[in-house]
Image (cartoon, rainbow, N blue to C red; front, side, top):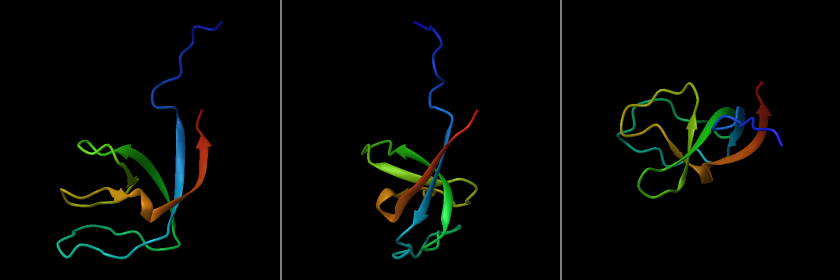
Length: 82
């Protein structure tokens, strides 16, 4: 058996399509996803609730924002990076 361990997280790039761009908060400052567009994303668990949140790579948003609800996106593809 090989003793080689994969890095954590695995080197995979995920892409997701925005399916819901409604309900932008009034005080939101930053880029907002558009419905139908495909974005490179990273899915992380919320620090307190543990719910999955989508971070769009390359997007700018002022604190406390920067993550979107996973229900706003549909997974499209995952590409293995090596």
